[in-house]
Length: 455
Image (cartoon, rainbow, N blue to C red):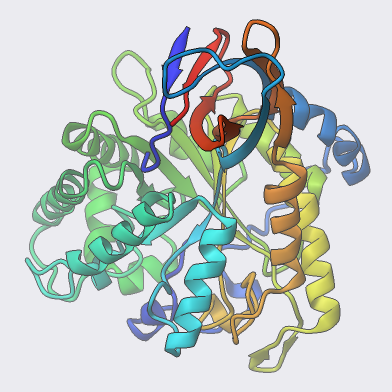
């Protein structure tokens, strides 16, 4: 029997800053590198077929049984018939978003609303580590801003991820030297960031978009890093990056991340990211799912999961975008009909992915329409920080349909059993005129009776 105590804190584009630094601006979707134009194979199932079995799969893969034995402050087992309230307080599954706008919105009121709505919905946050913006002057990284976000995340039980350690989209303005010197600086940066935030940020997108590293945008805006990658070769480059990150924090969770979902990603990058014994150097496969050009549908999302699950590693959908309105000339606006469609797409997409056993995290991109990538209405919140229907749908799913809240009574032996979603739980008991509280964690491998100390 285990005694558990609850212990809370355990194609990417930048926003407008990136665009000012030489990003793509509001370019046409046809020219976007995030739209793979190669003909896709038809999904193996229909959307309806995928969704019809989703609830059964969610119950199979996201929930499990547990037996509890509750002890009062006197270390005595609670008497039989004691009413116990049990509530899931934090999902094991990572429901996230980038958190780039935390305390950087248009007004104080917007900042308050942003933080409140983020914390009320999500348990996972992606922090920015774009080299050209993070270290605008050589040797002067912007660690203070990262510390600010980290402390907020700790206070709100939000797990953090750093993104990205290596990406050749824009060179830092001061970067110079030979290809080997540039590569050395890149590896030093990886080690420094991972080591500096060890214990605070232990999940990292190590290499971003290496599959199509030599596209025109990269050659133009990141000539130094692109040339260094070309000279090193993709295989040696990604292996060196992951090895350096692993040295800095052997316990970190390391991701390879890309917007390509066609065979080029596994063939050119993932298959190269192994050691001499052919063991993977990565822990998680990151998959981007920007849908500015149209909703994927549940069937396509499922097929992507199946394609990458064959590697035997967890999958994180690292950047998910569904817009809530049409583009009108140079403007992209949210509309009532667009918000309705966005909400329905969110319901389908999250349901399909939450039901797939290989998926462990799903990150939205961006949380608000304020300064969203491409000026698109991509947020779960509008420009004024009011929630869209998509936010409400996610809240209904994460905090309602996919949550566990129940009241049970202890048996004659002081034990009780329940079946719930995996994650951290709070326990509340009224006993001897006192309100007692405790906690426990339900994991997929929980098989023994769990002792819960109440105080």
